[in-house]
Length: 149
Picture 1 (cartoon, rainbow, N blue to C red):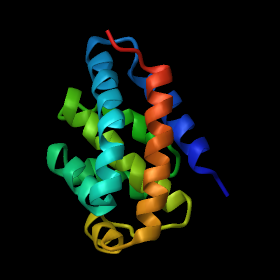
Picture 2: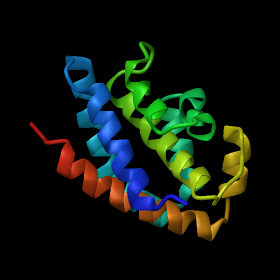
Picture 3: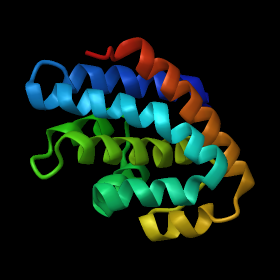
Picture 4: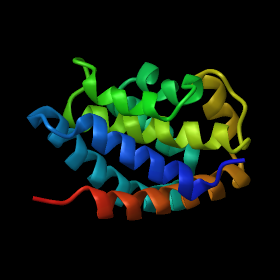
């Protein structure tokens, strides 16, 4: 079974690999770093269901739902290449998809659709704890790999 920190590290490495090199990709990286820095606190206080809903509202349900359907974490990094999602929107999509991917990979949730995942996450303290641990690692790795400026 994978560990929370392994999933977080692999995601940040993949996002950096896929998004670096273009102006649009660099914008996604900066926005993703900002999301990783800010959303961990929101996860802790408001819960996972609300955070993934915010991510979907600021990007798209379909993009965030990729976290439930992806076979490999590298698929999530390619969200930054979607023309309809740029900058902040792509960053929210990657962040929300990453949370759902991690929860599914760790066996915390089993949903296959966004709506079912939100229902499964409501009042799910175990999912909130796992998501917060994942978000904490994601924040640290994002700060280490993606530099401001």
